[in-house]
Amino acid sequence: MRTVNPQKVEIRKREIVEAAKICFEQRGFHSTTMAEICAKASISPGALYRYFDSKESIIAAMAEDDQFRAMQSFKSALSEIQNGADFFQTMDKLLDDVVTNYCTKEQGAMAAELISEAMRNPIFAESCSRAYMDLHSHFCAILECGQKLRHIDESLNIAEAATMIMASVDGMVLRMAFCGDVSNIEASRWLKNFCQRYLSPKSQTQSQIKNRA
Amino acid sequence: MRTVNPQKVEIRKREIVEAAKICFEQRGFHSTTMAEICAKASISPGALYRYFDSKESIIAAMAEDDQFRAMQSFKSALSEIQNGADFFQTMDKLLDDVVTNYCTKEQGAMAAELISEAMRNPIFAESCSRAYMDLHSHFCAILECGQKLRHIDESLNIAEAATMIMASVDGMVLRMAFCGDVSNIEASRWLKNFCQRYLSPKSQTQSQIKNRA
Image (cartoon, rainbow over all chains, first blue to last red; front, side):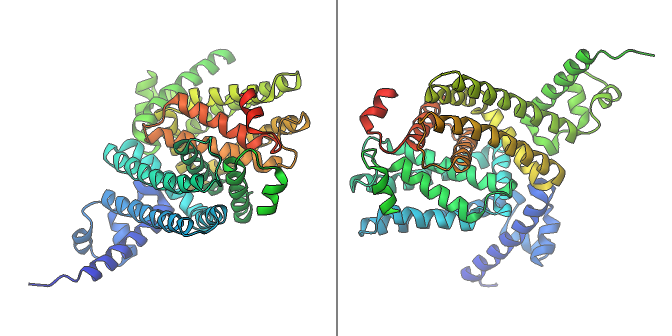
């Protein structure tokens, strides 16, 4: 009997997901066939089915990867703020990461594909929505911490603020995917400025905000 | 020779677009066939091709409809503000309209479909991007007017603010399409609160903002 090396399995799965990503970016989920994914990943169909039983399970694994990465950034941002890092500087870093990793034509295309897939596939929609709510509650924890430290306006409802900021980021990712007129530097600066204006206590004067920026 | 009544043509085209919309919402652009659209619109293929030469041109007409409606709201909002209406009250009405008309599962699904179609179809992408930029410049005119009237912080870059607000709205439309936890009333309230906080001059104290809200 062949022994299974879990680390090797993980590496092979990741390679397949990466290969599938390239196919999906070029042709979309629906038009991509398992045969194309096999060709791109240099694997036989028989071998591929040992790792994934359908195109849908590759898509789900891809979405989970993104979710995992985002969750890791949120967790480390929270612990940084808890350990005394400046709230807005930490937010700025998070937003820089988002713009670098997601504000690309490819990632925007993928986000649009994931959403339109979720719209027609209730099981996938259910898992996307759960993943989104999970991210949302982690982001709420970051904002709550900022509110406790009085960097965030105490009158702001945390669930509302988390939803609005996540929506703005999502909207920006999609917008940048199909209009080429905003640069990554602008996107990053604009998102930071927006968070600062939206979250800061209203009693702060403009000059105080400028000094911190 | 048969005479063509332009009004009848417009009505028939609109009926076809509405029928196509229902098909697209249920099965997505790619899976929907022209035959299905014909069946839903109760029209023969030969007759349908007199109005639209391809599925793509139906999709384009659909996008143009939305674009036209949005442009009309922007234009009337601008003239209202120019004629003395309160800036934030006019913005609130615009946002209420957006939530009522676009924050539905169907419209969110359609938006995702349109974006993912644009990602793989350069001609469609070009026209979507032009339409978006057109809306953006009309929205800029509204914000500029608000800035002249000193309802908007004078330090805010108008193109930046227009981009951020449009991104937030887009993100909210998509989010509400696949997570059922935010109600239309909340979405509308949150978007209004966000615009007020983001756009208001920073020197205003919280109490002033509360009084106006």
